Length: 294
Image (cartoon, rainbow, N blue to C red):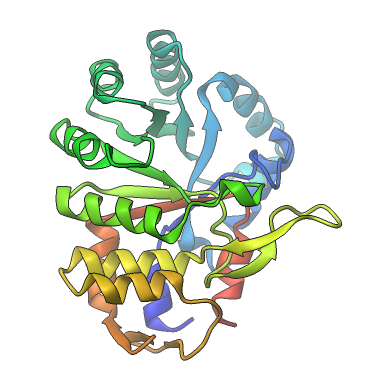
């Protein structure tokens, strides 16, 4: 894989196989995550996404794996918090204590917050040792909420798709998030509908006869964010975010060229370190295998 593609994909994909459209069982998702770690492209694999409410089920699934599949596997987790914050944090901390010397570990937490009060309430409960991602509603109230998230040392989360066409936000909405997050200096992860490298018409689920819609590509999102993070023209970022299909996309050893814009691998590396931390995807194989065809 070319150098610039490695810069894009390094630890990028938080594996969300439990969630639609894959919707795997815990046994299937845990087995898949273990198997992905034995692939040559395992360096692209991030954390396993699991609801806090299913941590014990996760433990049982890992324990049931054949020894040859457990040995040498890593289990970094990002856990989704529900409404019972204090009870769920106690559950997370108890889980981590059981594996204090080795094994799975919850490293990050994700939650939804509708306003500044909810952001404050969640941050008051989650210890600073965890990476905390907060999904906030799009719209004109986004900048002050992102400012609040940044001031509390948390991170943001943006949803870019779903299993219905109506779940896909407009490019203006996504650009609004990226611009506000860059201005506030808030790192983020993106989730939903980012299975493919480039934007285009694709089925929204894996079911026969699935509805199709124009889904965002993770390259579109990441490169638009990179331009904004480095203070380059917003119109270039918007053009790349909206680009459909490969077009004139070129992935080289040290740069990407697309839509008349050149982005160096080093710019992407710095963006990945400080701004675009991860994407959530219920598929690991599609994002990593399709980039070669992109």
